[in-house]
Image (cartoon, rainbow, N blue to C red; front, side, top):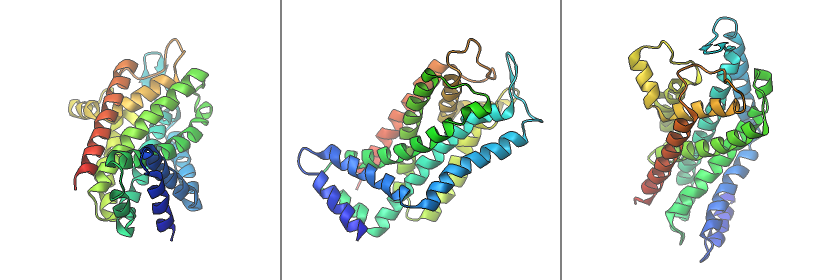
Length: 275
């Protein structure tokens, strides 16, 4: 019944001249679906906090990444990495709905609607990005507890970057989910591709002193530059940011992150356009 109602809402939204309304309807559906599952909301909020507290505090006394100005407490170093983890896994989990909608017949109904598939992609991507942004901003408010002083500039900059990252990673999740027939297969891909992508992005450990082959993997990972941009933005306004020497520059990081986002959107649109 809920699927039929949602499908009728999309049909109304895709009247001539209102294709953007279709995208908004699909995005709203993703948000409403998330908020109507209390266990999912609680888990999404508590999991990154527990992860940061246990791992960050647990290694605080034994592991302090070296910076040009001294050493950095591990929980402070790990904080931007957890932010990136929230965006990555929220965006990816949001696209599981593509598989569920296909099984329930909702996706097929949307695909035959008189609207370009570009708007369908944008609706799904927008919904996942909104969910990722909501959760990451709630966690960002805990930055002072990690020793990171937030300013208006750093909050605005981090918010914009989180939106860009959310779009890129949700698009990536859409591409993977579109080709999957089961949720179990999607989780398998997450285990062997997406988790290593986050782990090897500089989120968990700096690459200073790492073997050359590992350092090259980190450099080729596009998420590395999103995490690096987050690190630098959170310390914007400070004369000397307490960052390891291996962290790429802000200009390079933003440029590669934006490029990665454009490629992912194009890939998702092309994937959905195939019959």
